[in-house]
Length: 199
Image (cartoon, rainbow, N blue to C red; front, side, top):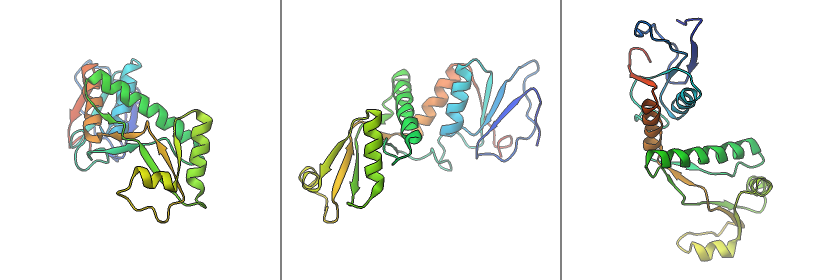
């Protein structure tokens, strides 16, 4: 694998290795990020905002159909059982997506709410509710009768109760990751679409 000791290499699953690249003479680069999916795009964006000189490389383009960020929608939710670290990460993620949405002037997040359906003996939604309560995140616990009244179009025969997260929702995945890269480019990041360098 090629690497310059003066260059920090951040790699994402898009590439197994980096072939030597031609960088303009005299151009100083701090970090090369390979893969412009959601992780690579945000890493490049945040590194650039922290003052690093960054090149972002992707073989097929941001939000392409081969990437996990290439779909039209992804759910952002706060409930992760007892795993508080994921709930805190989701909180921060939602905040950053909303900030980017406002900055880019695009509606990237839709607060549709998330409905969890539960059986009495299912610990995951119980632990999720405990975590959300501890962190002060809004949610509603609904009885089976309340759920059936709210959503009469669905069958809830085997449901004991439900939890509704009103502030969670849907992210427009492909458009959102493309917006991150556009913002990074407008802030001075260099973006290379190069299947030879990133494959």
